[in-house]
Length: 334
Image (cartoon, rainbow, N blue to C red; front, side, top):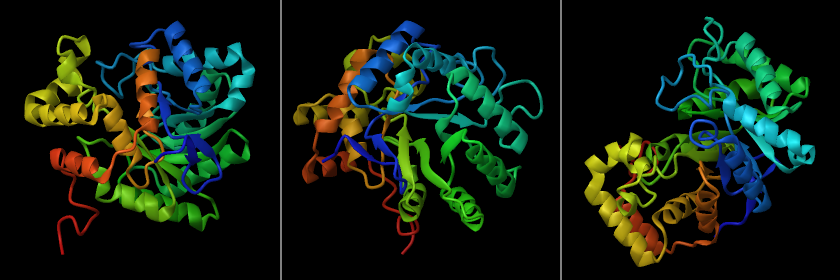
């Protein structure tokens, strides 16, 4: 079903059908291993590399509190790019802005001041002169869209950023932001990034329909729902299965996961591959973000590109993990 590359939303930019997520680089994956994973991804045709300025801190610490390790992930990618400068033209480099990168009151969210400074700092850590894609990591209800777009347009004029996107935005946030961009004569957003998987399908109500209508691509993160869809019953003794979202989800959804892994056995495929393949079959999905911690994890994920799920298999997965019932308002009204 899937080709290896597709357009990023309505833009002319071609990106791979899988994106490499780098959130584990630093806290869980050391620099040498991260560089090996990056090499393997590019060699296999994956060109979309996703990161964020706040990545690199211990995942168990407060997400938006100030920790000295923030920025470490961008630094790891930067040293990889610096080793072979020609790599920069081989990848579509995406990072994000919003989270606190210091203790000052203006070191967070989406004021024009923070956007400008955060972009410059990301460029420094990544050792590049431009970003292909810059995403607003979260909605900022305290900053007007006019101010945000004024700051973003300046970055584009300066050649520091080519395309813009959002992350963790509701459907109406995306529509509102896009409307302001269009009034300014700008292309606006080309992608939204949000949590989406068989276990978490809320975006089907409004976010995905809004993106499809506006020609905005969609990058699902946490496609394995923190490992819950990655064959957790097969690796009950692995440390990863004893912590985080996977452990919590397994306690409340064990019967569901048992049905899922049985279905995957019947399909003859690994659960992680099936979860990614399902996302690749969903209308509007550009590229699931694969947060590989090892080269083996990356190779397993790439198998999803060659898996086609038939109508019966898709129906079975829908029965195991019912979605919200379609887009709003039909999902809950006539």
